[in-house]
Length: 265
Length: 232
Image (tube, rainbow over all chains, first blue to last red; front, top):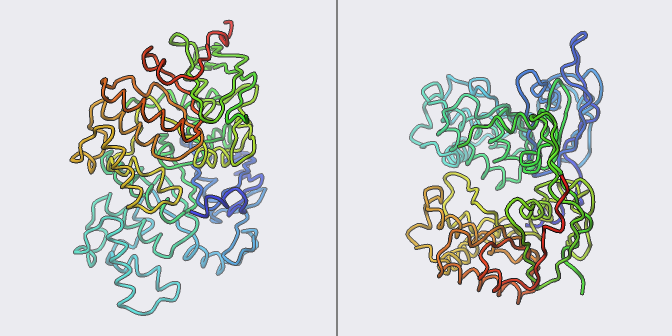
């Protein structure tokens, strides 16, 4: 794979510089900087209230930072500051080059329309108009996320939690984005369903060479999916590094606490 | 000869913040090198820090000070200070690691667990699976198990899957953490053979082996880890 060789030289896709967000006197996120490269999976871990969701919202341009900036290298190779993008440009980015997988699939899906339409809609938004091709591509994606195509015309409200989450992933990936944000994607699922979803996400990420920013409080998810991890506490990044290094040799007291709190399998 | 691994004055201490910040010195002054085609065995009693040294060479444990020199694509790189992305690149194309236990992903078939290191470096799936199958055969894993995930296998079977996964790539450095611990005599002999083949290919290896007989068969040089013991 050529991209592995060029990985060392190529340019970052997403760059965060000194990102901060405060609500009045409360600092939700303080001075976060990092660069994410194509094909790289970064996990943001930490407990509730650590600022990881605030950070994810800023990274995905849904929340304006109080200080700092986020820039993204567009498909034309030009790196743009997200705040300078117009609303239409940002929406277009979200429909094409980005994906966003919500913890609650109901937030990322249209629950009353068919599964096929949920996937096909993203294609229509980027200009596809041939019904047969849209349907074929949608069925192809349902198969890839292990949904029986006999269910293509059913609405996701008739689906189980795990199926909904897989459908949400199909809807996000059908436009072949380069960057996907995931907010606790396995959060509301049974353990057995979680394992299946994680496997699926792991193989799709590798196959499609996706860059991913995943927010999770589950260190097992971080270990399975991510190359790098950032540990957040009180709005700050307190430790960062290679995932297996941070989890096997944690340095900070809080990271040691997190790691030691994992129940043995 | 140009060393593949050149460790200089490496030091490792664990600080246990949850136990009142107690410091556990592991090793200090770790200095040795490994040439291509050579197998260096780390010796010393349990707890002497052998696995920690191996993990530092893989970049899994951080190093407090000193240098972990790794020859990667012709250049000597200090793994102790390398960026995470670089460490990942070095692992993909330079350092292989056979851990004590298999950490397999649920649901993935044994044949794919073994073939994966080749697939991520660009080999076609069918060819990678053929090589994986050949290696599983040699390690006496029956073909009827190949499509099953290794999670339900016995300890010895899992370790052989792990060995196959570690030996399948043609990487210039290979780290072995007790590769023969739970194997029977026949399979131990296969591992000895595999190590000899790697030596002939010029692979630099560092191994931890408790079995004296195996150590005698694979070691070109022994590095006594007790000399690196950090005074508590």
